Amino acid sequence: MANKKNNQVDATEKELRNLEEALSTSEAFLEKNQKPLLYALVAIVAVLVCWLVVENFMIQPQSEEAAEQMALGQVYYAAQDYEKSINGDSIEFIGFAAIADEYSITKSGNLANAYAGLAYFKLADYDNAINYLEGFSASDNILQYTVKSTLGDCYAFKGDTEKAISCYKKAAKSENVLVASAALMKVGRAYETLGDFTSAEAAYKEIKTRLEGKITGITDIDEIDKYIENASLKNGK
Image 1: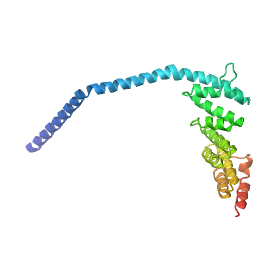
Image 2: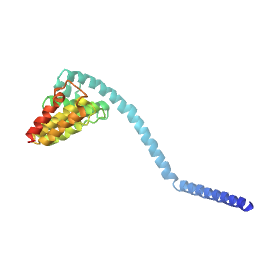
Image 3: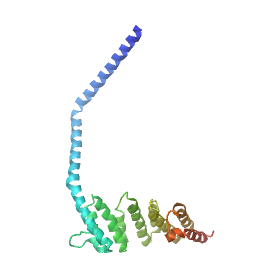
Image 4: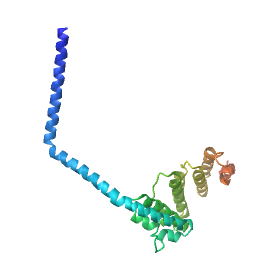
């Protein structure tokens, strides 16, 4: 019994010595690296302060200004006045192109890329449309994939069918059945222009598998069997 108590005492003393050594090592490290640690702390605080200044005195005011400008531009876009929606009205609205450039750090600046790209597409200026559409990024499901689909249309009109198909396939990943079905139809038709009827048939079959019965009243979906059959016949099956 005495031996057991002695062993416990020895173990406790050993743990205390280890703890003292660890504390001594930590103290020595802090003393040795006091200045570097202090500089690191000051740097972290400085970064935090800078971020707060930028957020409160730059980003937030710019976000409010950009949002006001976007509201004006959306009126022109809805009225199909695409020139003014891009370039402004020389009175109070600066245009989507300027919003994208001057307010690039804001959400509205990012959104202006999408609107400018879509407006240029409507004007058949596909190079500028591609430039702005590729500058847009978002997690919004419908707008994100609508932009991808429009990018595909731009490349298709420029004769780059392979790149158009790549964009359409990305758009077809949308959870929105309308966006996805339209993109898959474009995939199928693009493959048909390349004479790749096997891939076209596969795209049409994907529409049938994924979307048939989920939505009605859209001719392409309601008549998807016709597209599958036509692609199969052209493929010699």
